[in-house]
Image (cartoon, rainbow over all chains, first blue to last red; front, top):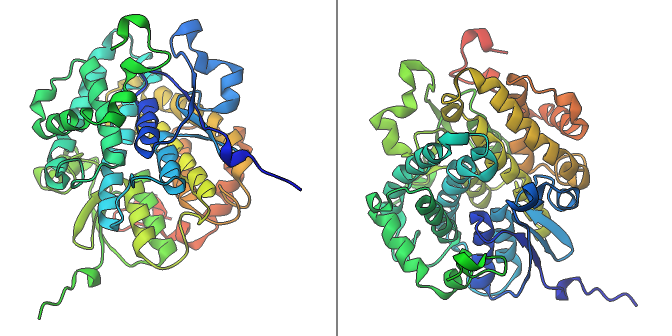
Length: 220
Length: 220
């Protein structure tokens, strides 16, 4: 008799405490109540542990996050989040209504394709002294587009009154904006949503200041 | 009696013949057999028609594509494609199996978040004389990761033997790679899949060389 234990193994998250894309996945696991193990990848130490041959075998893109789950290895945070949503019980991370689902994906992709890649570590490492100005420019550009969209779609959260993948993307992006000294007060809807979401337990436990690899001086 | 005609109106695609993200949406419409109207937005003429106040009201991100469909306006090509998939009959653009869906989304996002944003017009306009070298670097970097992933997931197409959103993302990205003089021969799986997909009618009719706004000298 063949017995598969695959579905009983805890997922393993290869991530970094301060990576906004890793934080997205941590929020999704927390919202769904899924237990997982963390395998920290320090993006700074030793010239970047994501660049090792060992990690390249896990994610050829040499980025975090990557997740080992149900016998497969996935990278790209939104693919991981939607896989978790489709295979685990608990609150929906995408609404049932197709139009609302589309709005959630539009907002998520505006952040995940339109903002984050341009202030990603491997990009700004190429920018040298201009990296702060470069990152601010692209975050501000994205937030200027996101603010009027959220004004139309938001209720209590990004799309209506239910937490979704859009919220999972928003909070870590605001955290990045603050790191790059973007004035978030210019975007009242973004600011309001971020504040409301940071009160929620799943966003708190997954916060960069509370991870196994968070350095002592950055711990909350 | 109230009669809604919304679902009878043809979708309107605001796009540009050479935009790889617009091409993605055109492929999805073609695979699904959905008729739509095109409202071309010339990204070069008049300093860029996407920058007008009129277009900003359609897509605050001032990018193409944007799609008016079923009474809502959506931007972000993958959100649009998945909306089309979830609301229109015809062949599935994402597989039924959750693991395969996750692989399709992983490949799609590797391209849509990991490659395309870094060689997007508004980014390379900031790079000046370095723009060719910059774009080549990030396309090569992405293809070096994509090649081993596709080696594992591909059958006849990117994930198994069914056409999916991953294929919809791959072909326009290879087109961009060729524009930026990347040597695609280095990536035999990418090259093989691209060649197979270009034989399919939906990829042909949606090609940049055959759109209403294609300039005469670039027409096929």
